[in-house]
Length: 99
Image 1: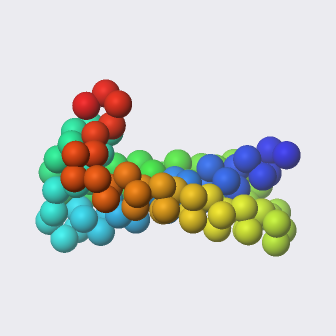
Image 2: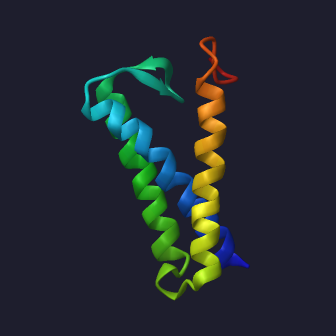
């Protein structure tokens, strides 16, 4: 059970890192938990925090022992967060609850 949770969380953090990294390295502002229009540098740092957490869930969660079902769950988590964020960011007035 813990391997499945680790696989899911690893996928969530890994896929969440992608838009922040892309926007950051292309010099564009993007929403982060720290602000509605965070700088490119904040986005790069936030992407690396997400990648570090994904790595922690992979290595600490026995990622080298994952089977096919764990990799499917990893990809499913990526699909869930990707589609959820696409819907969220499609709203021009999108704000995180604390913003």
